[in-house]
Length: 382
Ligand SMILES: [Cu+2]
Image (cartoon, rainbow, N blue to C red; front, side, top):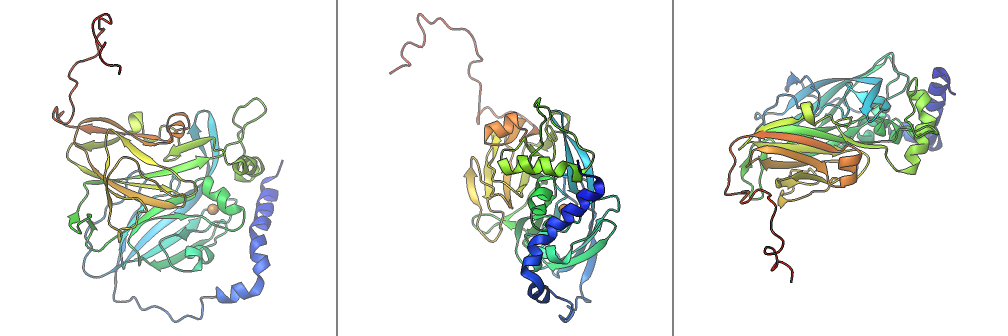
């Protein structure tokens, strides 16, 4: 078994390997220190405090005229997380939640992130924003050891929903991602969302669903193993990961994170924007009893949304967005429509919608009763 220190050293060694192969030339190219500074002194700065998914921090849908610098703070936390089903994950997280919190800015704004790697952590971490341009999405400029902090600023040039994730190098990349280190950013068009005709569309609420595949090792009896820290969990976890069969596929970090007492709530007539990210694996969201009225399946708002979808596809490594107006009250299940993953592995959320039933849209004309098979139903078969 690896000691904490041995694990950390070993892990650092593995992480450095792919970098060594490319040697000094890459370092020269990646040196950003000689570039002239960007003058952003005329721009307004605002701070946004990130909140736990599935909720999203306060934001305007239509931006003010001038771009702003939007400051965020995130702390990287390594900790054990109960993911349900008797399984515990040695998790690595942005801000203590799986997924990491969702950020919202507008096209043309600057995202300025202060990233802290807590001193109690064992691992090096960083952040790769799929919304950013250059330097491995910021990954090569943000690598921080435990006890270090860094600040990255990037211009949000493309509107859409995008994944961010940790990518500290080599086999650390998939491991950190499937240990929980991913989240999403939504870059809204400055004038807000528009429909297939280009007309403005507004939402009443946003739910941010981060889907994760976990690879938690089992012992010889088939019980989930528990580990002292992330370093100790690595060798066994790697073996399960490389088999590509997840032990869990969950929304928001654990089985039942968004069902029962944790269900989402909306009202009839409300338009809800579901943002769904998966940093590692394909998925296919479906709202049982509802639809995607407008779906940006790839999440990129410069492309017109698709309409009336039953199920949409989120490519691993991306975030998509679906807008739906709830027309009937009831309990809706929002699932990954690989139903094995939804029901047996955990990828289910519930939305409880209050309102008045509309019999025009659906009516139970006859509640189930026994029938006389001698007389009735005889003409049904061809
Ligand atoms: Cu990491």
